[in-house]
Image (cartoon, rainbow, N blue to C red; front, side, top):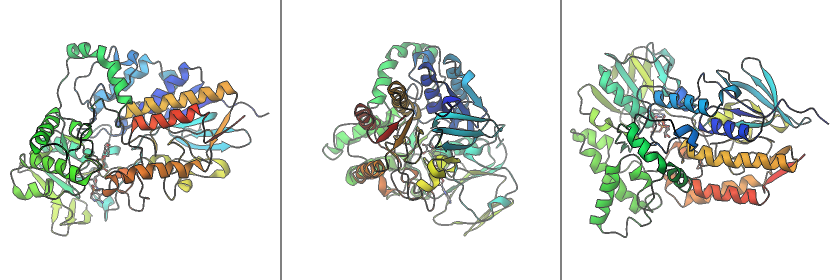
Length: 534
Ligand code: NA7
């Protein structure tokens, strides 16, 4: 009989998923610890502290459903910024009493499954070693930044940072000539801030983002106190949705209503702001190209009204869609389309003039050279799989995730991989991550994991492993869903298509409720697809 491990479970990552799991496992009597390389809890809100970084999901959707956390917490804005989110995470750790089990500012160096002992041997970056029965990576979808190989990028002499590696002390844009490469959610947010402060702002765009009006507003303590009795119902609704919102999708086709009715509906969703125009739109917007085109055309015309220069209108909101609306993540904006009317803001279309070289003080495109003092790389992430694959996690026989997923991510239910016993990850590939906001997925998945580990404890099992034949079935199921939608038609990070050479696949499961139903059925069936042993 082998010795017992030091702890029952090690959680890696102090974002929504990791903190939720930590709290629930502790309360259920597991001996659990958490480590995170960041010095503070908050997950991506620790690393993504670039100017303007804020969440695109409104509160209270974007928070824990636990009343102990929301009872005495008030937000200042409907879409909070990174500083407030970090305070919120500290508050959650306080009221859930999580601090004693957390080790922050220390990365996990390696985790090796000891087959004889039946548990994981973990080494931390500070040299600490521990053994754990279960390994629970909760590293989020954006744990690995993607930086394209731009010619001579490292020659740039001024501050040059990826948005997810932003210096904690910040960078002052005042009076500077700022360049931003990339126009995804991060690029849009930095651009809005930089346009206010910089002497000159140049935005290098490869594909226009189809951004939606955020309609940010301040929230008062009184209105939040009045709304709180309704929170449990909102949290219930988000679990019954596709994307983790309480916004219902219309159950009609965009094609079966009159154009007057459709326009009125589009106007209503547009006015509501946030993701209403994306999540609450007609039932076939994301599956039927004709319906999608109607949504695109409305979006295009709305955006063009904000831009005075016709040439810029065409670049930012082209006559023909660059890809179907909503199958590349839309992002939310406040002043993004207005800033291009400022003389100090320039848009460079990289399809017309690609970048040829980075200079110590500028960027050379095929058309000309521009001078910059600060370079912002808002170029996104090796999303969903990158963060897990780069960790030194070695399963049975020393196999790595990079090896197991060389041809694309393969999992059982988006939780487990054959060859990696006693490991479950949250917010990973083939789960709703990416399509769901963090807290909703954290709670749906976290509850399932806690129930599974309780089942193992009660039944006297100490080891589980996904059966190898589960992978193909789960991948086939997701491929079939993808084929019913327009998602494969865009080169997005949803499809793994933003990183050269990455296998193309729909990386996530596009329905929280559909996913939860399947996972619950697997639990009811005694955790089918998992080999359980003592
Ligand atoms: P995104 O949404 O992946 O955006 C990355 C942007 O960077 C996007 O506009 C890319 O253009 C651009 N990009 C990537 N590589 C290059 C090169 N080589 N040259 C020029 N431009 C490039 O990342 P974000 O950080 O903004 O947002 C990620 C998620 O975080 C977001 O979806 C939310 O869920 C929160 P492309 O469109 O590929 O042509």
